[in-house]
Amino acid sequence: MEQFICNSCGKKYDIKLTLWKCECGGVFNIVKETPRINKLAWNNYPKSLWRYVETMPFAKDSNTWKSITMGEGQSPLIVLDPLEPNTYVKVEYMMPTLSFKDRGAAVLMTKAKELGVSKVIADSSGNAGTAIAAYAARCHIACDIYLSDETSPKKIAQIKAHGANIKAIHGTREDVAAAAQKAVNEEKVFYASHVYNPYFYEGTKTYAYEIYEQLSGAPDSLIIPVGNGTLLLGAFYGFKELLENGLIDKMPKMIAVQAANCAPLVQAYENGRDVAAPVTNQGTLAEGIAIAAPARSKQILEAVRETCGIFIDIEEAEILNARQMLAAKGFYVEVTSAVNYAAYLKYKKQPEEKIVIPLCGAGIKSN
Image (cartoon, rainbow, N blue to C red; front, side):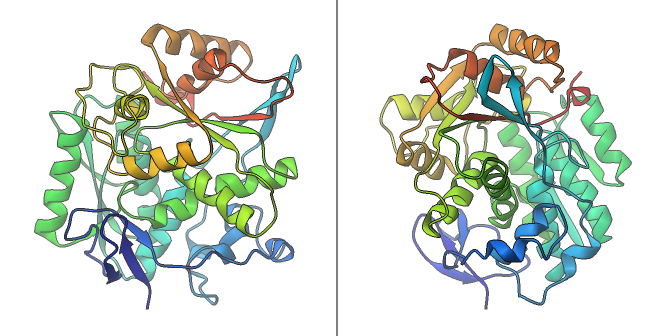
């Protein structure tokens, strides 16, 4: 029987359709052992993130993913500039819905279909909602997406195109999440949350597996934007599995990036706290990481500290400047994704330090 375990109190639960958090309020992880990695088996699968399906907690004979996949994963890893040959960008916007969130959504919705789910509810700043909507459509599952009424119209149009119902909420990102969670509890349906459901991280961990294959090892550092931490935690878990299988001999340093106008994790890190205290979002162009109270702050802070990483905060002018600079190099990213390059420009890298930066979302998603 598959089980969840609370990250706070350690209580275990059998996985059920309507279960999404512990009675103590804590978030869930999946009860599982470190998967044994057989690299030779990867070639038995398509050139997508499902190449690594044997490391995910699905039954060995499960083929549900085959009717759901749209070829997500295996994004290019490219040298950013010939003058900086050790700095790479991983072009995550080359995904079916144009963001890295497809990694988690594909895996999470595959699990939802296996559980016999007929409807899902999700809340999002945009990209996760788009990804969940697209894969819900692939699964023929009804879908409600809760968003801020100030979300980019282009993201809203994309979600509607996949047939999802838009629930526009006036208020903060936390108000949006609260409205979605209230609906989940009232309707007793599946909460397809990229924050609370740990199957989402089974998808984002493939980011690490791909980098390992593309570099034939681990980089020295990863620069990753952090709101709710779905990519950073996925990368951390993926590289940890590679380390525990003896395929790499060190963990990459996690360099986490937040917008200065909404930086609860930066504050917690600088003040030596284990959990981030909620902050007030002062308003930032980086809507995708404007999370004032990240539910997995404890895990995010642990991952950064365990890898001897750091947090970097970015001002609004730096975000726009970095976006223009990336575009001049041929990479047109959405505004939130530009914080990564802004952080790279501020980061004091070592000579020969091998760095990977994700280009998380396509520029056409932003206004």
